[in-house]
Structure formats: structure tokens, C-alpha cells
View 1 (cartoon, helix red, strand yellow):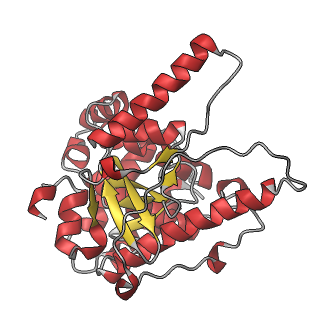
View 2 (view 1 turned 180 degrees about the vertical axis):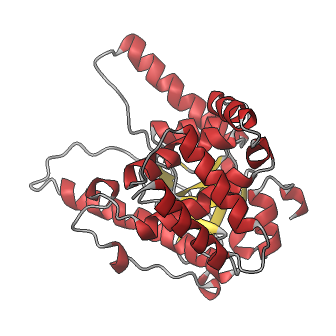
Length: 312
């Protein structure tokens, strides 16, 4: 779709989304138009939208090289206010929302396998069922006995289902508090360009199912936790939902230990790569997590946005 046609449709969409906010549609539309000019785009496709998605963290980071390049470009044409006053940053979620409606996504953008139908995975939040008992575990002994059937594909599918159920349970919780999907938060778990599961306003949230008292962290998830505004949400369905900030002492020690183990193997066992290391939740974590399933809406916003957890 040609740029002018897309921009015209996008402006109409913004006017419908923000009918009572004077100037918002124009500001968002211009910000996106000038971003496309910066990218030398002549037409809009799913590829361009995905590229913008991949650039989003740097667009939001005032210290990034890309942000400085954008600032120079916008300033050279007298449009710096669109960047500095946050219009571009605010317009991005609306752009992605509109783009997902208007532009069909390619098959390789769907992370879930063909056998797992996302609309068949249901996990509704119910406050009446909560037990608020943080799942913990102890060292799990490995069993090296031979099994007749490996069950690898079934185990992989079950892992995807359990993770997706936790994500949907969490979004159901947000909805129960009055947050609006695709406005206050976005479910981006099936979009590989994000690198996390839920975007809550400007914060990225990685959701983990901890029913077993354990979870895993990929290399990319560790990088996000260390370098961006991504935090962990630990979910045990019909039990509780716990928030773990990326600057948690417990989490920092876990990540440090994972790196030490891998460095040790690289030095002493170079033919072994411990890529998947199971993290066991123990009582040491309890001072670092907050059970958000008992919190009101305002406290959840404060907590996710960096508010003082002691005030909750």
C-alpha cells in the first residue's frame, strides 16, 4: 500500500480511536508519516511494520544511536517536537494495532505451531479461586533410565500450551481490573519481533508459568531483563500472580549464576553448552516478589511503572 493511502487510512483510524482528543489524530499521523520518511519508505507492508516493531526499543531510548539520528532528522525539518514531546512514542502502539488489522501477517510471524490453536487455549482469571501460595521446588534429580517413547513433540506442545495459558490468564487478570486490551496493554506473545509477552503501556512483561516451582530464561529474555524495561510476571493459575522486577537481588544472582555456569563450561568443558538451565524458585525469592493478584488497579499501574512497592 502506498504511503499516502496508508497515512490517510491511519488518520481516519486515529480519529475514530480518539474522538474527543483534539489534535491527537493529526499529531500521531504526522509522527508516523515523518518516521516513514526517515526510513525512506515508499510503501507500507507487513515487512515495514515489523521493521518499526524491531526498532521500537531504540526509538523509545533517548540514549540510543537511532534516537539521536531521528532527532537530527526531525530537527532538520523543524519537526523535533514530534519526537521530543513523545508523539512518535505514543503513536507506535496505535500504528501496530492499525497495521495488524489492515495488513495480513505472514505465516512465519506466528510462533505457535499449526497443531496448537490459540483461540482454543482459555484461562480465565477468577479471584475466588486464588490460594496465594507461591510455588517452590527443590533440586530435581535427573532420571537417565530409558523410556520406550520419547514424547518430545508432545512435551514441546504442552510447554507451549502451558506458557500460553499463563499469558492469557494474566491478560484476563488485567481485564478484570478494568485495563483495556489493545489500548492499555497489548498481547504480543505471538509476535517474535517483540522479545516479550505483554506490553503494558511502555513496559515489557515476560510471563512465566511457575506451576512446577521452576521456569527457564532464554538468552534474549536475560538480555531484555538486563538492558530494557522488561520485568517478569510469575503465574500459577488459580493460585496467584507475582511481579518480579528486573533489578531484583534474587533475579540478578540467578542470572549471574547462569553466566558463571556457562563460562565455567566454556573453560573446562568446551564440548558442552548448558543452554537450558532450569531455575528453581525457593524461599529466597519471597522478599523480591509482590503478589499482584490482590492489588487494585492503581497499585498495579504504580508497581509496573516503577512505583515504590513498599507503598502498595
